[in-house]
Length: 466
Image (cartoon, rainbow, N blue to C red; front, side, top):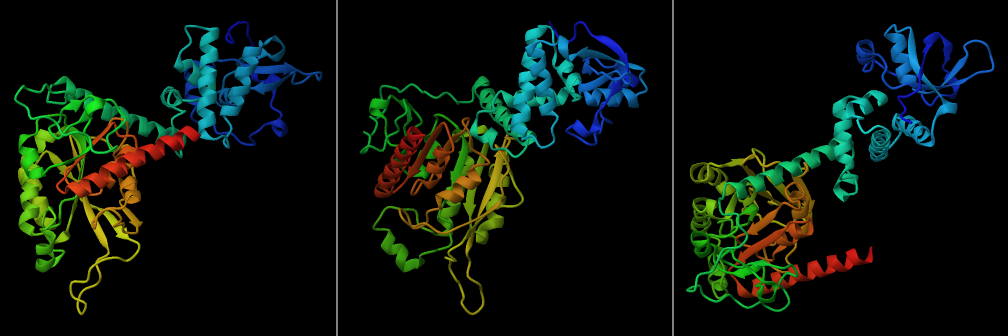
């Protein structure tokens, strides 16, 4: 029978609250009193009879409702007797008492509330979240929030949230990001995964080694998705300056950009030596050529709802921001950059007599279309340099830290100068649906594809052992 059935109204003066046996020595019912004063107590409390004459009943469950009724000046309260309760009703009472414990982990409280609501709806199909809220002395908004979180409680990122509110915010941001992707598909701005190839298209490059993705469908350098049997490497050998003006395929909602900074890092002599290997030079003219190409072709490859990570040198900081403002006004740049501090103290000294060693690098974070973060993270991270695969590689742990704000299952990530592929590996490890990059040096691209493939294999093996 439903908990609401067969109750009696008992004067509050007839109910003993055995304070020494209660979990809480003090309770605050200020949030419940207005509701009780306006609507009374909907959900009966539970009492048992006493051998003594006065007061004749002892409280078992429902102390907050009982105390709120006293403070509201009500003369009596609906009660159920413990001997009349079914096993389901007793389970509800047990859960109610546990959910109200202050020392209960939020995950257990959420699970308990969800079970209470389910049990009530099993007893009474017309039961509402509002009635569950009243029974527990919570607001309807709180119950709704907890039930939403409970639906995703088994997800790792949700379980490890520090509070239920943080978990709810993660889900809300994820929903907003998914809606941004859906809206772009709805209005037809080129987010289709597959574009038909014309008879005049050039044949696609064959996969190199074993570096292709194990997923069905891969993005070619012109944006087409190819069946797994003919999947090219996810990091293609192509110049961004040639690729961007011609691209018409899938758009990406996370772009990680690490152009050469344009600070003549290697000097004129070393630059001439590096020309033997195909690469972008580190002159300011090249940096701004890449930057202007990026801004003027932004609509070709970036979604209307997305994020940009753009590494730059403060030497060109003002000019970089001005270029974005002039050529890509749809990007909203954060005031404060992301900062990677090189914990191994690696860096350059331009003038040993007058200037300190420069041991950090900066990255502009920008959003497009008010895209929400997955979760907030610190805007500075300390880690050592990594030159294993490329002389200017950004370390993967640092990239994973910052990308933890931006990447979830709704993410498609593009890197126009992928280098070692560290950014794509970081995004892939965080659950991005697709990753794709360009690299002008064939040897570097081959190494990056191999590293990405090995990273996926290692992750799959690790998950299989769990």
